[in-house]
Length: 105
Image 1 (cartoon, rainbow, N blue to C red):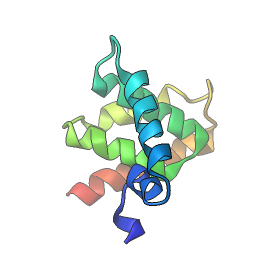
Image 2 (tube, helix red, strand yellow; image 1 turned 120 degrees about the vertical axis):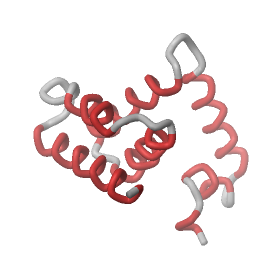
Image 3 (cartoon, one colour; image 1 turned 30 degrees about the vertical axis):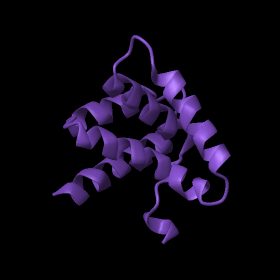
């Protein structure tokens, strides 16, 4: 069952206060002048840098759900190259994008 839960739901089954606090924090940091799409593109760039495939794919799927073309996700990853992301991290993230869009076909 835990594999079908999103990360917040997974934590909530063990500690609802922690899950709710995390969700409140996320809501607070994304409320501002940037739209949701831009915020999500920033997040996937950051997640490419950390190499967090699971979280990267969660946010990439959100962008896919907003009908954001794969090219925009790729650019969000590529702009991190040599600034904060290594070549191999960039390649991995580009592959994750391909995975997400292949799943949707």
